[in-house]
Image (tube, rainbow, N blue to C red; front, top):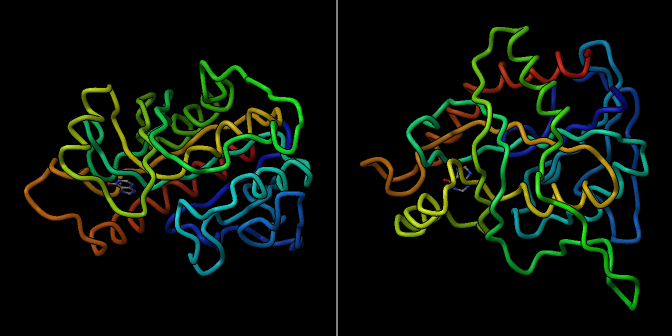
Length: 245
Ligand code: HPA
């Protein structure tokens, strides 16, 4: 399948299941990635791992250096990237603890460096992004779900918001009208930067709360942390199965 890299999100700053072989302190023309790259073994295969928010979860979504992260993984030989993402659920089939492999993205972020091209007089590139996720890698994730009997929803539209605050109830109603099923803060510009460098990219998302206004209670960090922990084992089994495939 090629060399797999995993970008860990909230709750996945480290992967105890990864047998670490080497830690690489990468540098790129865009700066340093969020943390040293870990090369290790997962499911019997060699994979790369990078925690998006840094080792101590110190980088909020709008301050992640997405270009450095994707460039460093590219330079380390990544052919495929699975980006993990804790998200809020908007539509009824995407309630807390749902694991899903979204198919579409709507980008509501602003001010993030979203291209490797066009800086300092370099050529502008308009990459095709009609289908933001790689079909083959999505299928590999869904097949891993079948092989492990883990229930995973195939599809859905991921709304990427700026954060770090959560959304207002009115914003979520707008995202729902736009056709979004889940909401998170990190799939963009990660997905498009991977596309620009020819790296096949998919998101493995897990729903950790109902989005704003979709339940009677306030969204609490306790709930989010507990639900991340709940999904953790299934997410790791899915990743190990994909790595081995
Ligand atoms: N909104 C945006 N990002 C998130 C959420 C949410 O409700 N939950 C987890 N990440």
